[in-house]
Length: 442
Length: 169
Image (cartoon, rainbow over all chains, first blue to last red; front, side):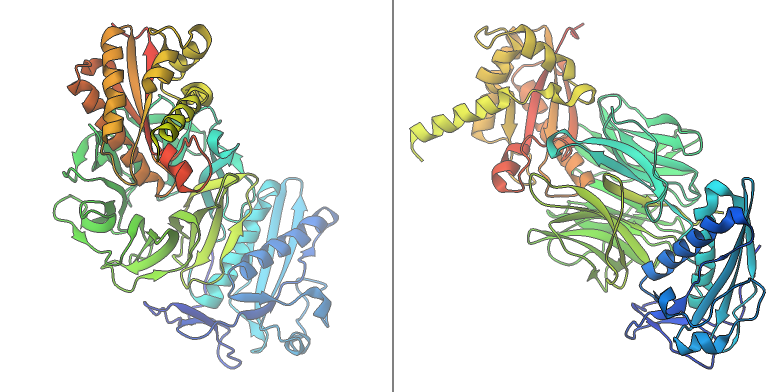
């Protein structure tokens, strides 16, 4: 479908924590991930050209969503239309590079939109302004009117990918818990939205308390905990038809904190019996369960490594809550968190090299990351109460829940770069918590 | 603190318990039905009434941060619950464990389960038949008090014994 420019030669520095826009005017246009100081790359994305009357509004909207995606990363800075010297009047006419150089637009994105009934076609090109040439080949997406935002996200993913050399994260969704009502009568329901908060849909009503939904590795199913039966139990839902079934319903027990294995065939979760919580593994199709931990302490919040070989989890076996890694078959667990305070909700990064977590220390909560052996711990955020990190599909951004203090306290979703920069709230119609980020959509 | 001040506090605590029935959460609560019955059909002066159980006996006990240990005061309340339950065999109970908001969702669910279980074990040790007792944890999801201070947190770290009538086989 797409062809990437082959010679971007991105250096993916494993421990690279800071991003910088290389102001390269000779080599190919790129943002290189280094330890340097970040300076966002200036770009322009004029309104796309409507190829017919029906496309006028959408042509403008697509360009705005592309700009919101790119600038939202903190890696790109849009040059506003007021500064433009020349206009793009047709998708095929030549670009006046000098005019875009003069306003220091290093990248220029041009495009067109055609609307025929319900069918929408979006074409675009990326220009390396200072090199005076096109960056890669132009592309075209076909879709439907209702899917126009997805097409815009795909354009932005392609721009991001060609300029940074990494895959993007814009054409993705987030399943979360929507919250309404006061703190002592809170109503919760499962909801789904685009990564940027658009297109919110509800997957359950608010009659039963629901917690912590988790996307499957392909984004087609969701695991979550519901009090539908009066007791917390794990459910699995098919996202397309909202069909759900209880996965674990052993009488006299509680099951919660589920996550899929990387192959989507198994679920790792917490099961409580007689007040003691341990970690179990279940094969989804057979329902067969394997107990992975056996301790009188609390073992919960398990998360698989992306290769499926290991599981990171939270335990208070040492007297405080710490993070441990064990083989996916159970067995000896190695403590990895070493700092003071309490650690929880560890989540393995999609790249496999880091673990995001919640840390509670001196009355404050933090979202942080560490290497998988527990070294190089860095706290990215701090506030009264935050928890539940989830990784963007490319492992560059973390979304999490932040709850404000006091009787009027409300939960909302935030994102932060793994650099600790670019902290932003994701707009949601009501309160929101427990996000789980999908993979990039096909 | 003087003895008088302590008793006033205790009375205030009981009044609070009375106005915060489990049925406020509608269909969500495991013991929602019993709470509704209690409020409408019974009076606190009838020692066989669920309202008497809630107010005079005390339907809840409190815990320290991150702990499920029952202190002497809690044991005294639970002793009262155990004798009442032994005499009023029409009722089963669901013990709800709760936590304050300081902690992650998952940990607090597990912690609430520990607390509910500690109450269950104590009631069993005082002669309440285990097949009348169920436990559930709400973690930090169902606070009674909503301020973000220790005065509220102390009220939220609780286990509530909710009566469920008509379930005894």
